[in-house]
Image (tube, rainbow, N blue to C red; front, side, top):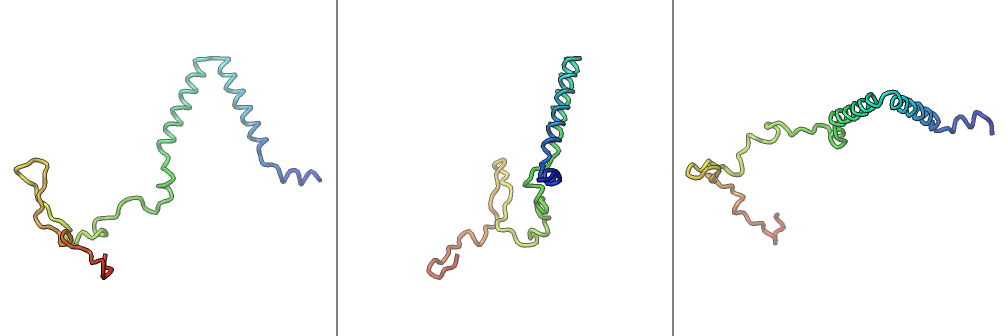
Length: 115
């Protein structure tokens, strides 16, 4: 096996190990030099991580074409509503049905297969 073949099969873990050793050495050096600076660095890294996570969109939203609900004109606001309600003035926070929907008394015909 030649050296070229070995270089092609490397996964890049060596670079990650070297980088982690350097970062660990720098953090330990900061800890040895000044514990107050070390604590402030850890606090700043944690706060930065919180802000970074808060700004990231969830994966379910990232893949969606348009996560917002459609505009009222696309939902069919021009059509007659199923039920018309009015505020019941005698009882606060209650509504009375003014015009019931024709679907409220509709029964499906199971024999004909209409559902």
